[in-house]
Image (tube, rainbow, N blue to C red; front, side):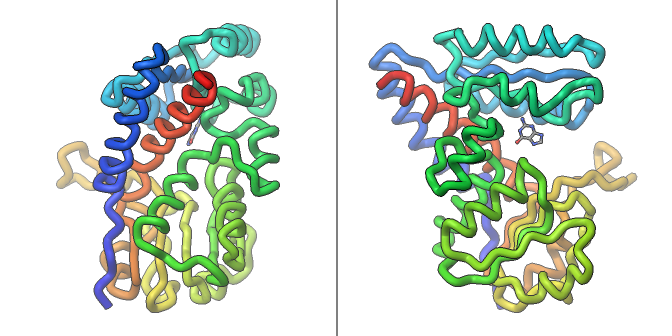
Amino acid sequence: MTATILDGNALAQKLRADFKTRAEALAAKGTRPGLAVILVGEDPASAVYVRNKVAGCEKASFHSEKIVYPTDVAQDVVLAKIAELNADPKIHGILVQLPLPKHFDSDLVLEAIAPEKDVDGFHAENVGALMQGQPRFIPCTPYGVTKFFEEAGVNLKGAEAVVIGRSNIVGKPMAMLLLAQSCTVTVCHSQSKDLAFHTRRADILVAAVGRPRMIGPDWVKPGATVIDVGINRVDDPAAPKGYRVVGDVAFDEVAPKCRAITPVPGGVGPMTITMLLANTLEAAERSAK
Ligand code: GUN
């Protein structure tokens, strides 16, 4: 079987062309979409993600603000900043990069963001709306995954979908979105007893585990559509930076069995930032109405 390689860079570019048209229409009405990104601490992976999010805004001619705090900043300082951004008309989206340091109550911080500016879709109000099938903001990574299904014309109705990972950021919202498309959804996690039993039944397999190349060809049903959300660094002395980025799926071995598969890098990653821009634009359009 020759798998369709789902190219996240190409799809992101296509979607961003449409954003440009919409942003220009907004600009004509005097509104420029604006995103504020808050980063607490020095986690190198988070710093890269935040840099890429701000760069994505700049490329799309959105206004962006990056607010960086040291690891030991008091939670109240961050809450005060969120309150200020909630009231700032230049800002339509607010994102607090996760994970936060241990002395933070992450739920409290996320709940402090005005739901209409919660472009991550992590506020309880937005989580509830998604669960009720009336999403207002869909979390960016699973939102991007749905765009791959649309683009590749994957028939989801009645499909067996297996999601590995139950995080609030990916696994749970992904399961809700697949359910809304009439998949039969199984959510697996670190305590699941026989993971391969489930994955081998999957017409749609979404891996969001964080373990390099964990999913090999014998875990995948022939003709499955495989979405790899993993971004894992593995040491590689021959690589220019001394490491390589690989997914949760052993791409080279699994791809020949699939109908369609996302590569890492160049699959889900570029789509996540694209959907953040989509949510920010959507927030700006709603505020201009
Ligand atoms: N950390 C890892 N992924 C995400 C994300 O999508 N949003 C935020 N805010 N933090 C993250």
